[in-house]
Image (cartoon, rainbow, N blue to C red; front, side):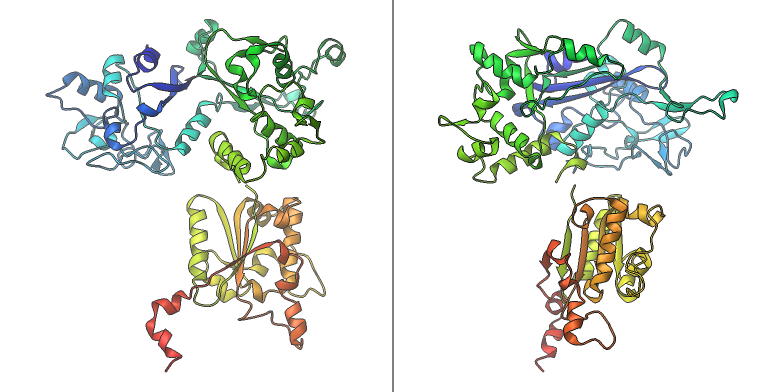
Length: 557
């Protein structure tokens, strides 16, 4: 019934795509999460259009008594916070759903969040569980759907891509599971550490009935076909852990894949002559027989699996499959103007697909649409910020630390001297934090255990900021680099950890007794092999002088 209203009657507008999943909550009743993507002409682009669909206020009981009773019955968030600190929605002293909401005279478009719906302070209040509640406690709803179905239906506007990605992740998160361990007193001394932990979940009677009658638990429209991409004779092979390998090798033809059969259909079927990504619109893949059959109904979307540029030939093969029509074999893709090339990359070069950065931009664009945020542009880099006095380095460092920490990330702030460390929020000296030796003639490595809490802090850190790096001996920074190698075990410069070093080499160099100037300079970071791996940035504007006219005139008087 709900699908009829949304997809056929299109009460919210023309629907381009729909995905939903049914889950069963703790009391066993079915609960649906449904996401609609509207066509361009029907998209909700401003707060006024939001108000035509979603309401977050208590209706006027005199004008609409029926809707008023339904809102009170289904769409009021239970008292929580100061009114009821024992409410199930409380997490760390706050409501996980951020109730009560703030009053707002009009709807406001949210940034990376749901819209802030209109909640006027109109004086209307209701009594729920001995507490008086107003519009701040109303769950957003559609008046039409609420009146039609007489049940709890929360309707939200997903106004940003980031929010939609979160919803997709929530829809496909799978069932809630628990891990449990059953032990027999007689077998306490003989424990199977691999099989002792079991995973399970509780199936309620309504869910059991739902599955017995084979009702759909999830649906996506249009369906998305994931198309395989592989190099010649490098196709993926999957089988169960209890499968008979001899039977598989004798009876199953592993040479047939989506891609190889696509080549074959281009030879024998005129309908198949299209790009690989458009092929599923005309054909359906039968996994049992490993063949493409002509499609009779339903619209589908083909998506080639994501291949990163660092994967080399496989990436260039994918690039060719998105540009070349009707290829009949891997060798056919290697042909350019009647001549066979040596690699897929050479084909891309001769066809001009690599002459600009468009292919890189296309890869990033695809990743932004289909990958989750934690997977995009994750590799760290080392930076050196040349920051003469007065250019605002302390402000920059504080801003970096505050920005990351406000998002829940770990940011480590250190400095070569104690005075500079005290200017950084949570700052420590590098010798104290990383246990860097003071005398490198006796010890050249950091005295920090790989199993220590500080080591775990380094692994979790999103940023490591080192102020006054020009004062540190190059051996100190190299010892820190060796510490990262030992803890993170990566082959990237600075082990892929974003590190920011800063200072001005014109101010202070390492303090070493009885050392000639030339040797003193050679002991700095500039002469370390790590210097070439750092991206150099510079703060050029003297903010102190710009904001203090008296300071500017001081040297002229």
